[in-house]
Image 1 (cartoon, rainbow, N blue to C red):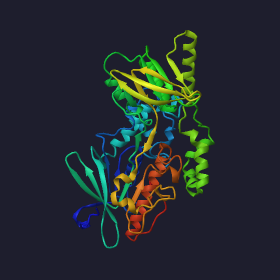
Image 2: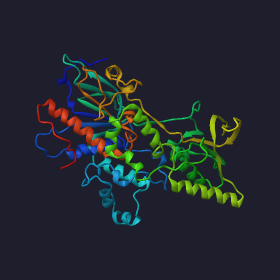
Image 3: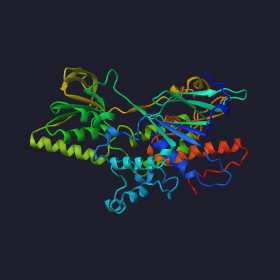
Image 4: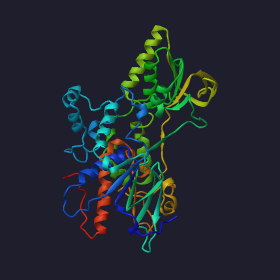
Length: 447
């Protein structure tokens, strides 16, 4: 229901960010750097709301030896502002590891280190964030001219508070995807919660664990479990013949360049589909080549020694699983013969990916004002703003869920710094325009 209360009744923020993962963290950092004297430009007021009690990004998969698949130069800021005090290099200097990292001769830091970098950056903008606050709805504020303002309903843990804003930026992240018919329980997990669940595991160490999936996370989980439980058998189930390497060759990596977003956005639908098909192997259901080699060496060594612990059920798929007492009965189908067989296991870990959280679940009646393409997907402008009908004059921006319009990097770390700059410049220019000021070219972080 539209709120008809007067704008004077609540203070008005220029922007509210929903969620505070790496994407909105990059936006908050851009905002912090933009809060400097810049002549006539509007100084954007903002708050971000995050349901977690502290900053956290895939904590359940912070394996000790897992490395990033993205160069540290694609951090929160460097592609936007190489001189930023929020860069990964600035973090290394602050932690006293800059020289040691240089000597390491790598572009790909440990994932636990990169997470520490994100926490370090988040701590510097914590005045803009309210942790333990979950946005539960967004409603238009009615006026005769149209909707210029939005009421953001926030569950603070002690009731619901309303914040009023001219723009919202939705970065609601991803939700775990499980195979059809699979219900998680104490012995059936998604890999998102791997470390949390392993730490809570009671009783004797597991003797057999089934891992479903063919991507990077599945391979990392299999390798980690083999190390953590040296007496356990790990059964890897996937429909491919083997783990496939990620294409991280220089020319293919251009699909993640900021300029590639412009190319993809302007392309006709059939070209968009072709590009996604050609370059899916840069990101989806693929594994780092070094990890594939490590797993193969292990498999061959076990074959030589006569004690197989890593068992590959390739060209197979999971068709069912049920917990019985302290065990899991996992049913696997051989895709070449169609035959089913059951694996009696202690645990089932599904490394089966994620789906974007549908942004319109928060929008309520605003949803009917959001325009869609012939496939029913949200229409999104180049500046990541949802295209709405003429009655909605406030801005609803997306960080994620724009792969169909902006390409494969729409929710990835690779383009986060530039994407944040584009969104903030769009908001600032629209605020300048509303105030009658001159619209500037993109300048976020250039000072």
